[in-house]
Amino acid sequence: MKPTDLFNDLQSKVSEALRNSPAKDIEKNVRSMMTQGFARLDLVTREEFDVQSQVLARTRARLEELEARVAELERRVGGTPTGGA
Image 1 (cartoon, rainbow, N blue to C red):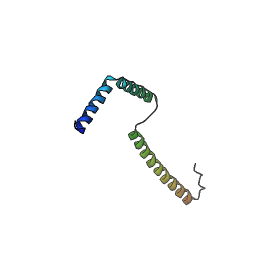
Image 2: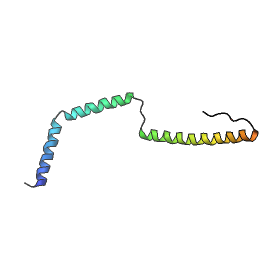
Image 3: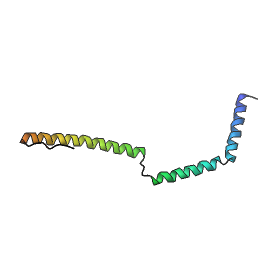
Image 4: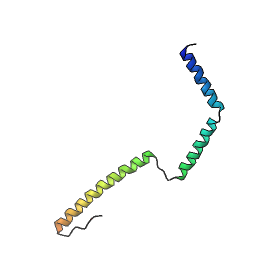
């Protein structure tokens, strides 16, 4: 018997054993439980997270720009700058 034949035979026996075992049902039930659990949580996809991170980065940059403009305008009119939080 060739090693490849032995490997193929072993692979088919393992596949058959898994098909006939309760492992497939257990996997299906665990997936279902996890899906239901995740549905109850307030989760977002990685794509949504990345988009919101980019929006936040742009918003922070814009805020810094506006703070600098306000500080410059206050300096020009001689007003006292207000402290930022």
